[in-house]
Length: 274
Image 1: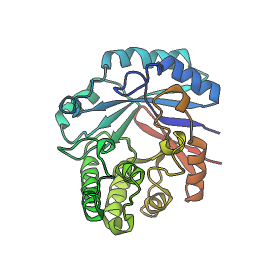
Image 2: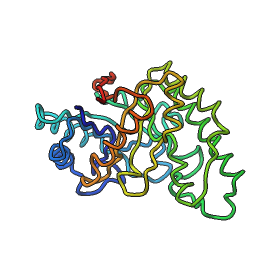
Image 3: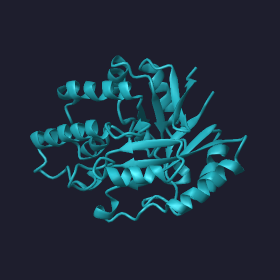
C-alpha cells in the first residue's frame, strides 16, 4: 500500500526547522516506511510585503533533485512547492513556476489581501465576535475561489486554515451557512482537475482530531464530483513527517473515497486506499 506524505517543509522554508535538511527528511520518511514524500517548501508570493525570507530557489534546485537520485528505488521523492497567495501577484507566481521543473504545486491561502497570516490574528479578542468571524470566513472562501483561477495549481492546501485559529480561540465558524460557495469551489476544482488536500497537521502536532477540511466538507467535495485528494502532514521538522497520514487515509475511506492522489510531473497518480 502507498504511504505518501505530500506536504513537507525543509529548512529552506522561512519557518522550517534547521534540522529539516532534505536528506534527513527523506531518511526519516524511509525509516517510517513511507513510499512517497513530496517536499513543498513555502514560497509566498506576497512574502516581501509581509517580511518573509524568500525561498532559496537555487538551493532547492540542488538539494531536492539530489535526494531524488540518492533515494531512487527506495523512496519516491517529489519536488514540490507551496505557492501562497498566487493571485495577489500573479506575474511573480508565474515567473517562479516557469523557472523550475516541479512535480507538484500546492496552492494555499494564508491571509486575506492586505492582512496578516491568520495564525497571527488574535481571534480570542472580544472584538472578534460571531458576525465578524463569519464575514472574514466568507471573504476567505471568496478569495480561495479566486485563487483557483490561477493556472498551475495541483492541489488546494488546507482549505479551512482560518478555522484552525478560530477553533484555538474557543470559537466556531458556522460552515452550514456557506454550503453554496463551498459547492462552487468544489465544482470548480473538479472542472479544473485540482485536487483537494486533506491536511492532517492538527493530528500530527497533537492538537486534536481535527483535519483541514473536516469529514463534512470531504463528503460535500465527494458529492460535488471530487475524486482527487492529496494527504499531507505539513511537517516542518523530521519528527512530524508522516504523522497523521494513516488517520487521514481512514477518514478518506469513511467519507467515501477509494483512492489517494500523488502528483508527479504535475500529473495526478491515483493509488488504492485498500
